[in-house]
Image 1 (cartoon, each protein chain N blue to C red):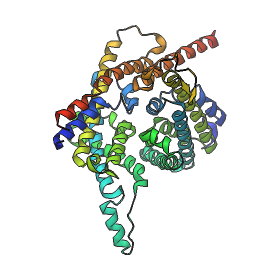
Image 2: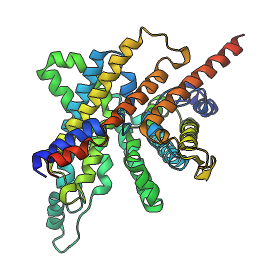
Image 3: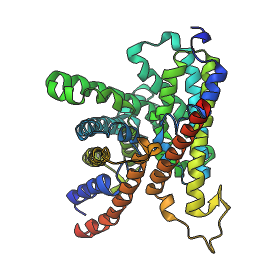
Image 4: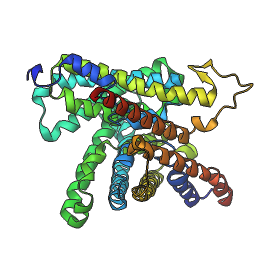
Length: 230
Length: 209
């Protein structure tokens, strides 16, 4: 399969077939909490996409150069200190701590950058930025990248390009899901929902029906694969 | 800080189970609740992992609460939680390899589970170790209860089993595959939330009447 074909396949797979919200259940807290209006939902989705891309880039670099078993930078430092040692250095026990630190750093970075250079944008999604430190979509993307960088070989191995495409389209999948949900919930304001189900209850049921709809994308990846001559 | 300026340890413990149930009342930690509730076995492993991490981080945060600075608070919480999650993850990988494969990324995702950060923020950062651990145990029981209720419905309807034990015979029960798949999780949780609100409202009405 061509390289471009592989990238398209990753994009479609992440955004539609295995949608973050409807297939992996990550990012549910903002999905329920911030999906009352379409404009705020768009702000949240865009902020998540942006931070996911930045965090994914940082975490790919950290995993590749420092954390993975036998990573070049760590190996070089270790053998500089211990010339006699023949060991392969493995720092992967630190993965989770480093990722969460990177995500917090990325959120801070994006917040400062946006405040300085795009004040209008900052006003639009400023309140959501600190919240997304604890958004599971971002950590999930970092973990997935970790799986495909350390210890993976052949087509399973992801370079920086594949990791970035994956991260951006994971964010897009979240954006699609939260906007669809916000659109439905705006219409729902005019409906007579049974009282106990109002709020989170009916949102979960709608999400279930949407998840059923998204299951319709299953198998699209097979047709794409044959299209690209996989 | 004295224990007096907040709920007592016993109140913290009892509040966690039903009055402030993480799943139904606070609607926190929905991601793992949905993702691992397709069988009782994985749900209970998850609940145990969350209980361990919650207890550990609540105790540590409570011990260092005098040193916390407001702007670095959340970062300290998440790093503490990440350390405990690494321990839980390595333990599962070493002693329960199959289960660790099945839970996959949802064990590391405990780091960003809102229950733990919320409990650190609401309770552990303000109260003594005793109250913080009572709170952790109560909240963990409440979380386990929430997970068990969803997992029971999904496993019984989806596989016809409970904890792997046969409940409905396959000779007459067509297993509802959709309950095992993602849509089943959302719909079950939505209906259960509705039921919880309905029962809660009925109780409140009876109490006031």
